[in-house]
Length: 269
Length: 269
DNA sequence: GAGTGGATTTCGCAT
DNA sequence: ATGCGAAGTCCACTC
Image (cartoon, rainbow over all chains, first blue to last red; front, side, top):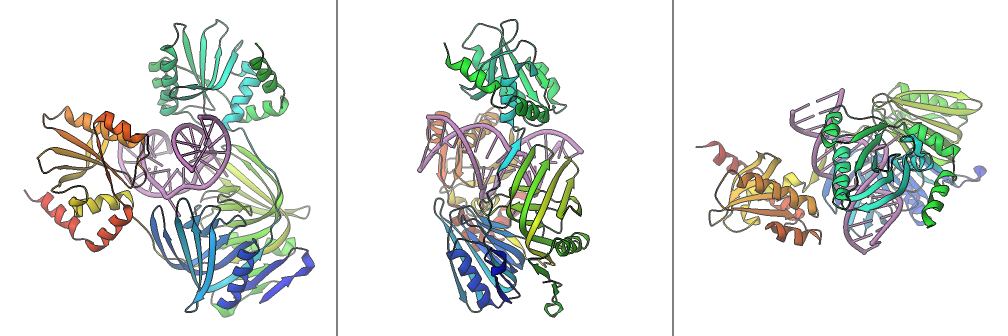
């Protein structure tokens, strides 16, 4: 039931259908040694903090990670039924044959209490995970791609700045077109909707109060919600379709070249 | 290594340090029988869809739930490194000694591929979970509490209606104060910010176009973002602090009393 | 099916 | 520390 597998170089502790007492040992082992705790069993959960909740008994997967984050997963649903973000302080005990784990977080002050009365599986895991995670074609990547390759937007587009503060927020890209007109670019990683157009319009409006030059607004996104087309026309804005994947490819090709060239041009007079 | 525990009434399949082939059996068992799949081991993950990502090898917890949702959890962090919402279609195979699980989702079309080359723990779980989940002190609860106990807002406040359509949206509570002035109440379950004040202002504005009576706007929330104070003053609105927990208590006390009384008053002439 | 707003949102970055 | 915007947000609800 209770086995330490030294043969694997990883101190893996697993127990199937443990008693509450056996399970408590594993829980304490994991929590004290900063290991990842994995428990499957019948439990109920209380939460008090930003809100309050009560989860009636049922069989769930319970995880406490090395950083002190907590998850209670029901057998359906992407989201945990109860949870706690990283940085919790834990205490555990057995009371009336029930294994209790309390997770307290400061700022905001909140607490999750998990109560187990039957446990199918308990494990203290020493997980080694240094693998890098990379997400391609984010909005930032699309921005970088346009800065590195301005013709993606249109021929002879010249970026001036990016993430510039313009009262409602930050303009994604700011530049001039081949005719010397100012161009404000708003980028959306996915289908651009009403809000994107309105956001861009606000920027344009704010900028027009500070210049007499003509200002174009271009919404960049992989595609556009169909009702947004007319709104764009009403607002006098333009749309430029841009595939995020293409941006990712371009970024790979021009990795640390185009953007640095642009930044260098920025810092020089 | 591979055991079916019939003694527990729950068909629990668990294998510690299984071979890739043993693990594949468990994976197929879980996916075909709609059980919850739990795998701990060394894996790498590819994702393509709304964006693209690559997760380099490392030891993680991999879960597929009964509803076809997928989670890849690293040993730190609240959020899964990769995931798939419910409703995925799965296929699995061994290629070059690597166990692959592919999860495809339609609308939007996206795919997660998980590759295992070493597995510490594999389990097919039949989790029974019918326990009810209740979250207390939601915005709705706060609304009900005020309707049940109007003095929570202020002495001699008289609710007239709630969730009434007033062009920008729905007024949380609509009533009259002790001096017969109209009162519009906007409720926020947590810290009220700029938007809450502006939202309330819009309602007031809309209502003022339809009446000559004086209209007060009261923002109700556990607390307020500090910059919102001045905005409220500028807009001529008021703030009333209300603790969600207190609302929950009051609701428990007046359970199905206050609100019903109010509703009865509504339906009668 | 698409759009809209909320979340115990979480997370990261800038102030 | 705090505030603000983004997220492969997810999710529930309305149109």
